[in-house]
Amino acid sequence: MLRPILSFSHVASLSLVLALLVAPSLYAQNGGMQSRIDQGATDVEEQVIEWRRHFHEHPELSNREDETAAYIAERLRALGIEVTTDVAHTGVVGVLEGGRPGPVVGLRADMDALPVRERVDVPFASTATGTYNGETVPVMHACGHDTHMAILLGAATILSEMRDELPGTVKFLFQPAEEGAPNGEEGGADLMIKEGALQSPDVDVVFGLHINSQTEVGTIKYRPGSIMAASDVFRITVNGKQTHGSTPWTGVDPIVTSAQIINGLQTVVSRQAELTNNAAVVSVGKIEGGVRSNIIPEQAHMVGTIRTLDTAMQDKVHADIRRTATRIAESMGATADVEIDRGYPVTHNDPDLTAAMAPTLERVAGAENVEVINPITGAEDFSYFQREVPGLYFFVGGMPKGMDPSEAAPHHTPDFYIDESGMKLGVRAMTSLTVDYMRAHGADR
Image (cartoon, rainbow, N blue to C red; front, side, top):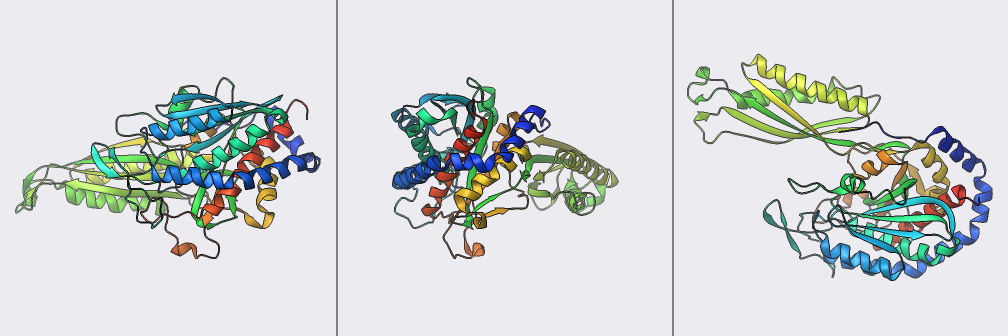
């Protein structure tokens, strides 16, 4: 399922190198436009906060973002942006054609919320519920997707006011199901791509951001190359021989065998992975087997996650898990069936594109507020867009200034909190990346 990560052609790479060489003059030319972007971000900030609060108060789960999509589509149409709905179930794609020819820049925001009950004391807290895999659950924007949608609407507002001067086209990609489609359904970026979201017009580059609750407001963090991990799921079924719990020697215990396999899996990373190259994670998240105290069951089952930061290590870890599990099982007289489902690919920032656009991030945030970070073992399905076209994914701060990051609630928790003053930088960054890339690559550069 995982294809090799795409990179620029030699021609595109040379174009980016030339763009870097002429960057100072380009930024001087863009000075007037940057002033307009900055003023536009100030003017739209109150509206961005209002949009965010609406999304936060009315969250919807993956592939169920119907009202969210309708709200976004209405606002894009009001800006004179061409809109396509029902992409990958509930996705929205907006196209803004500039006044002069140039590249097509994709800007992405994810839309879905999580099955989490909110504990944050804000007047716009969520009390919504939804259905998740057949169960009624509370729903909360516990990962900041509400801010991403609001930021992208803010960027769309500014760019629509500058359309006559834009040397290129902007494609706004409001993507559902980033957190994963419900059981038995397709969704997310992969399905948007299959349904043509990057075509007609064809997207040349794509930019995306993620707000972070443990990064101080006013800060941008990024990394060239692999910034977030591939995320895979493994399932192991251990087959033993059922017997009475009082006479274990008359059977083969799959529970004890599973315990030994779990211990063995810890060596896949600690003793078998070359960690000086890249990090990796193997975690068992669920184990079950048996029905009562005095029956040794016939089977036990475990499920876990694999996180890797390059495809070579991903392939090796997969092979090591299969070998470790099956041979430990054999040593105890049992058998193990191992299934591994490849999930999100590595989120890989194209190095040439990242180098070309880093000056833009430093300009909008101040060089002292931009940090190159180590890779993160979380995963992002923005990675699917980056497999098709060069992409840049970065983080913006959402933690109140002066707060200790260790005291800030992490993502996917009931106490997740975002300081809304951090969204303005996101608007400026997404808008500035678009304009700077167009000015560097437009037909009239």
